[in-house]
Image (tube, rainbow over all chains, first blue to last red):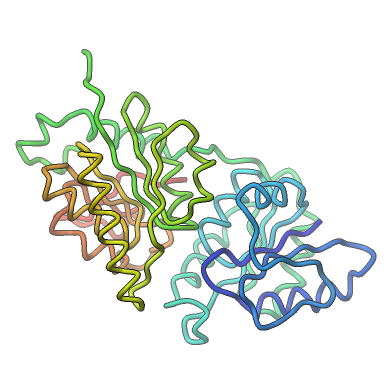
Length: 172
Length: 152
């Protein structure tokens, strides 16, 4: 199953319409389920729900062979933690799909990461999906924790209030 | 050395902000943590911990914003945290400011999604933030924000 998600904040009609078109070509071959948000576009060729609970979300992620998402960090980190190949398409600020172009920047820095396949626009989606579906060993689960450097810095800050009072932010 | 457990208030809005906050949990081990977010359904992610859901306010709805400020304020007063930490966005700004008023130390970790500049919320907390962090080395400056690693 291919699991498509646009996150809980806003709809993303451009991604959902493009995935519906792709799903129409795969009917009977590949099952697609999409979490679409309060979208105007109603999919015809894939199962969908406006929103799903965190438990259902976890089920869908675990049950999927490939995830397709907007370039939001919630979706990205979830796919990486479960080790699913992930196709991302960024929302565009100029189309009011989100408040600015931060997802385009996110998509660019994630493009080099193994297990992530970036479609900058609808036209790139089929190829990104093909690459994701053919991928294999590179989709390893990442640790569920922040980097040891960050965890260490925060632990030091939490426990070290005496030194902190002397005002040396840089030692943390 | 025995370290006294701290009371931590960990605050994040929905989606990526919340997922990034959860990745910091190893840093909180041994301390007493209460979580604040905007979705009641997120409670399942932090079982057996104190948990609060506040109104999901965007800067376009003043009434929702006012409601959120009151809710967060009440939580800060009730929790009396030693440390307030947030990964963004709006509820974190409010929690850090109110935390500072009651004498808590404060941490802001800007989202890893902010690759090109600190978020608007992140810039807003600078004046009442003890540890002001970016997750991008190229955005770090001597006077802050500092870079101390990222959530991945």
